[in-house]
Image 1 (cartoon, one colour):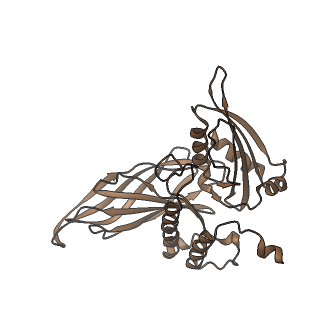
Image 2 (image 1 turned 120 degrees about the horizontal axis):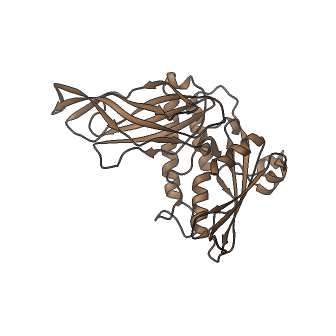
Image 3 (image 1 turned 30 degrees about the vertical axis):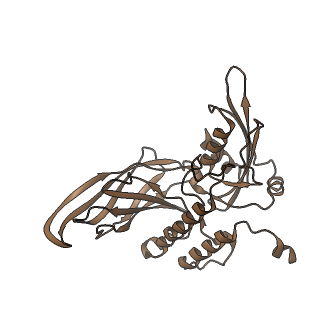
Length: 335
């Protein structure tokens, strides 16, 4: 029908192109639909007031495009390795996070790939020392007590020479949906092979290198999806699966609280509601996303200043989804 031709896509053309590229790489046998795309995160860094933020609080387009190209490459890496491709389609790939300082001898980033029943951690390891090679580099991942995740396998990175970056992978099995958030202690083990003018000296030794923790949150399992008509989608979901709550936030200004909520939820902003207010009026946010399993999640949030005995920012939030349990999980992740 003509209405389909002129209806807005639930993603930008640039994002559609990136998703098609990754879908083709995956070799998926699923029919080509919007639901079968790998959903790639738009931003690498949390939303914050930096030089990359315009006066409206939105990220510059150049920064978004750079991150998107990185994430396509990261997602494609899963399908290029048969042992990883066998775990199925990637639901979304989260922005990479640094696990070391950029000036250290070894630089490590982590990309979290979310699948239906698993999480694959991709550790991007760079060697910055000229006279050595790193062999059999693996990351030991230890879930916190009570975690819903179990380490079931890993793939080492081998032969990392000076200036090179190679990937090591750890596969996590997820048990259930009730406890998606978890932290993992990480340390890298590898064999250091000494080199002189690029040739081995015969000297080698085992090394262990501590890394920052890796965390998963509920919002890593929600992918950004554009909603052409937020109000219509909100009304269509109805109140049956709606959950409401109020929170008093300890922020001094509305703008600080708004940026913090956008960073925490990490969902798609609708109706340009991320434009920061400058006159003290309440900030209203419309946010959308798709939960793992294809469940639509919508959020309406209203932030206003409180001037009484307990100054701060009042957050009034309503969450609607196709499943009330999902609405509850999202709300509980805010507290």
